[in-house]
Length: 66
Image: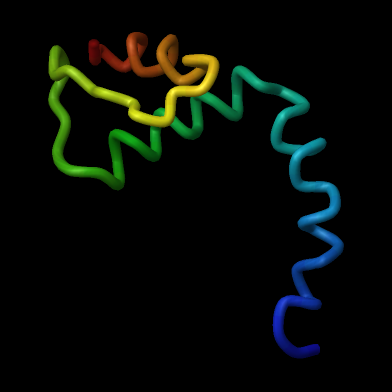
């Protein structure tokens, strides 16, 4: 298999699978924000420029961020 063809089946189901448990999905995304971005300490303020419906706000607040 070449190119992106090997990802087609997974991509077709991705949204349904990832958003099936939206709380778990958003919790995971918040963990990625804390782990992969610049060092963030509890009580730091995070500005989400692409916040959409602000679904990530609650998990970030639970991580001690504002």
